[in-house]
Image 1 (cartoon, rainbow, N blue to C red):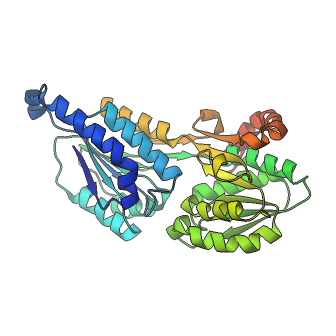
Image 2 (cartoon, one colour):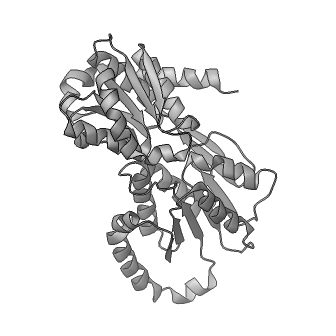
Image 3 (cartoon, rainbow, N blue to C red):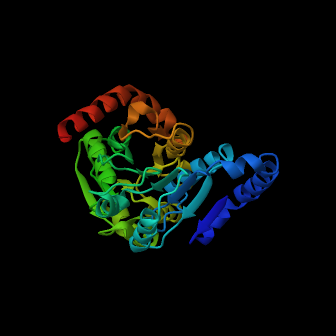
Amino acid sequence: MIKFAQIRKYAYQALGSFLMGMNLMLFSCSSSNEQEAETLPTPQLVFLFSPGGLGDMSYNDRILEGVQQFKMDYPQVDLYLYSPASLEEAEKIFSDWIQKPGQHAPALFTLASSDYEPIVEKLLVGKELTSNKKVLLFESSKQYAEGISTFQISMFGASYLAGITASEITNQAEKALIVLANNTDSPIHIAREGFMTGFQGTCETTYLANDWTGYISANLAYRKMKEWGQQYPFIFPVAGGSNAGIYRYSREYDSCPYLVGMDIDQSHLSNQITGSVIKHIDRLIYHYLSEWATVGKLPASQLYGLESGYVDWVVSPLFQDALQSLVENHRQTAITQEKAYYEATQP
C-alpha cells in the first residue's frame, strides 16, 4: 500500500512512473499471497520530507529515488509520504503518529531533515515510544533514547576539496563567497568550515534567511547574484533548492563567478560549475530502510564522511583536465582534515 498525504504537484510528476509500476506489482502479488498477508502484520514506513523540499532536483529528490527503490524491493511495506508546507504542519504529522496507539506491526517514522531535530527533542525527549515504533532522523549527530536513530553525512572533506579547487582556479589571490541557506543548520556550517580550510584565503559568508525558508528562496538568490557576481570570483552555495537561482543567473549572464554544484552532480546546469559536492543519500537511505525491514534494528548514531563513499567531490567534465589530478593529490589530506575537525569539535 502506498498513501500520499499533502504531496506537492511536482512530487506527483516525479513519482508518476513509479506509482504505475508499483500498482501493477502490488496487484499481481496480492492474489498469490493473500492468505499469508492476512495473518502477518504489515510493516509501516512513514516518510516526512523537508518543508517544500520535493522537486529541488537535488537532495530531496535523490532521497525520493532511494525510497522508490526500497518500495520496489520491499512491496510488503506500507509506505506513507508527506511533503509538509511548514515546520508547524510537519510537527502535527509527527505528533499525531506518536500519539497513535501502539500496534503489533513494525512502524518507522523517518524525518528527512535536520530542521526536524528541535521537533524530535520537543516531542520525544524524556518519553518512550511504544515497542513497535522507531524513529530515524536525518543529518543529526545527536544521540537519543533507544528507538531513535540519527545519522549525518559530513560535507567537511568534500567541501575541503572544493576549497582546494577554488584556490587553484582563482590563483590563490582572490576572496570567495559562501552562501548558506540560514545561520542555524549545523550540516551546512560544517561544509562552510571545510571549504574555508581548503581555500585558505579570504572567505565571506552570507545567509539567505534565518530559518528553513533559506532552502526554497531561489528567486532571492537570483536577485542577489547581480551584486555577488561583481564582487566575487568564486561562490560556494549550500542552500538546497535556492541554488537553482544562482545557476540560472550563471546561464543567463556571461560574466559570472565560478560555482559549485551541491548534493548531486550539477555540472549540466552551468558551465561555471567547477565540481559538485555529491551526497549518495539515495544509497544510504536504502541501506537504512532495508536494515529496518529485514533486521528490525538501526544504529543509534552514525557519521559518514569522505572516506565512507557516501559523499564526494566530483570535478565537472569541463575542468577535469586542469583540476582532477590536483583533487586526487589532496584527497587523503581532506580525509585527514575531516577527522581532525571532528576530533577537535566533538565533546
